[in-house]
Amino acid sequence: MDAASEVEQENGFAGKRGAAKIQERLQKRHQARTDDSDRRKETKENHSVAEEKLEYFSSTFNTERASIEQLLSSCSGAERGVVSQRLEEATAKTAQLKKFLNDSVLFLTQYELRQAQAALQKLQTSLAETREEALPKKKFAFRARSKAADKVASSASDSPDGATAAGTVKVDGAAASEQCGFSNIDSEFLTKTSEEIQNRDVLLTHLTNCKVRLFGSPSTLHLKHIDSCEILCGPVSRSVFVDHCRNSTLAFPCQQLRTHNTTDTQVYLHVTSRAIIEDCHGVSFAPFSWSYPNLEEDFNVSGLDRGRNNWSQVDDFNWLAAGTPSPNWSVITEADRKTNWDPKN
Image 1 (cartoon, rainbow, N blue to C red):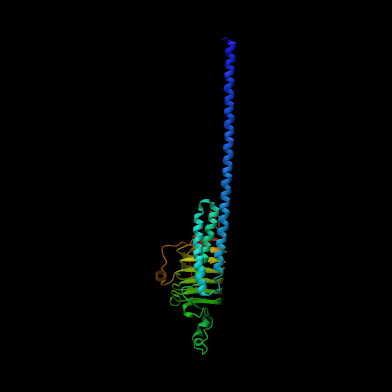
Image 2: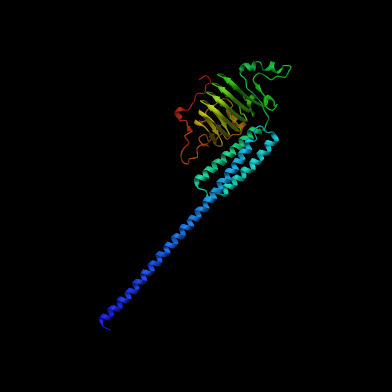
């Protein structure tokens, strides 16, 4: 074979090898496009499934939550037997809703999970508050009276028609001694002794510009419609409920605190669980610092853990932004904390 023939043959082999390489590259490119298309299709299908799961979760969760809220609302004004039955049903539904949320954690985003958890916690709190108010451990009444009313109490109780003392309100026919409190009073200094409030429910309502000292360990404390007051209370063995309070200073130890519709109020707190606020603004917290004789004894009566105080751990049901502090509450700086609890100051 001459040199020209050898060159031509080599060129022919080279051309075949080049064509084969080009064909191989084209096949790889086609396969890559096919794989990419399959991945896109799979991603789209997975996204569609996730959206369907999320839509089902949101629809089911919100429907069940609304059903439980309706049950709790229907307890107002109902007979005790009916209330008990509805609360039992609401408790069962809440447990089922919690299980449904736990089973759905894997496909929920962190934001969706936090929202659902906050909604569930709010529901559990509403259930506890409804049970506390609708089915208290005791039937009770409260006496809401000023010092002047105290002076006429004995004569009023001796009246022929059985009229109650001035300022006394009875609930469900219960004895007035089973709850104590003050109501509809303006600009007075009010006190209750340990003997008067020990293990009882205390209700303070519609007080304006008053200073209140509650010595002892009540079972629960309810504060409603409080304006420009200073209210100091000994250890509360269970819950403190605050509603529609403004421009006031409060101090108490308790097991749990629920605060609603409250503005520009300072709370000096000892709480063994966590404090919860809702629809509040300008609420500030500091450790409980009021002291009086027999305080340690009242702590023992209440059963509260003296060494456990979560005063600065506050949950705001109106603020769900993770990692960002709620603008509705703050911590009172040490320089601004009240240390002089003299009732005349």
